[in-house]
Image (cartoon, rainbow, N blue to C red; front, side, top):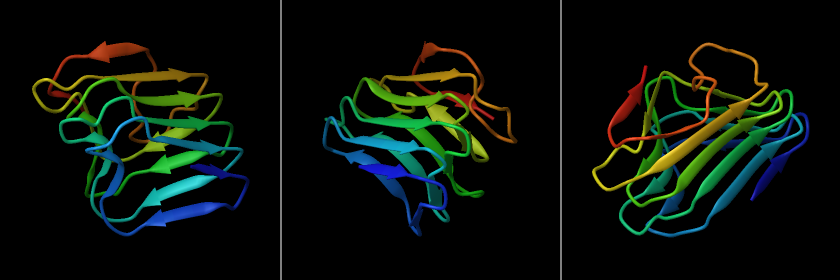
Amino acid sequence: MTVSGNGTLWKSTGTFYMGDASSTNRLTVSSGGTVNVTTGDAVIGFAAGSNGNSVTVTGAGSTLASSPTGTLYVGDGGSSNTLSILNGGAVTGKNARIGALSGSSATRSRSMAPVRRGPIPARSASAPPATTIP
C-alpha cells in the first residue's frame, strides 16, 4: 500500500494495524502523503506470527500521525517489524513502544527528518522488548 502525493490522506478512525497476525505487509507514505490515526493505536506487527511488517515514511511533508490518546507500537508481537523515517518524513504522536511484548523484536531508523513534537528519536537501533519512548 502506498499513500503518496501532497494532499493525499488515509484517515483511520480506529486502531490501525499493519500486520495483524500476518507477515510482510508494507506501507509507504511518501511525497507529502499523510496517514492520520485519529483514535486508537497505530500498530506495526500485532500478535504472534506478525513478522517482517514495515512502514516507511519518506520525503518532506510525509507524515504518520498517531492518535493523541493512543500509542504507536512497532513490534507488538512477532519479529523483525520495522518503522523507517527517512528524507524529511515525520512520525508524530504521544507515546511509542518498540518491541512491546516478550519475544517480539523491532527496528526503527531515521535519517535527515525534522524534529517535531513527539517523534521517534534520531538513531538506528534494535530495541529490546518493552522499550518505551515517551
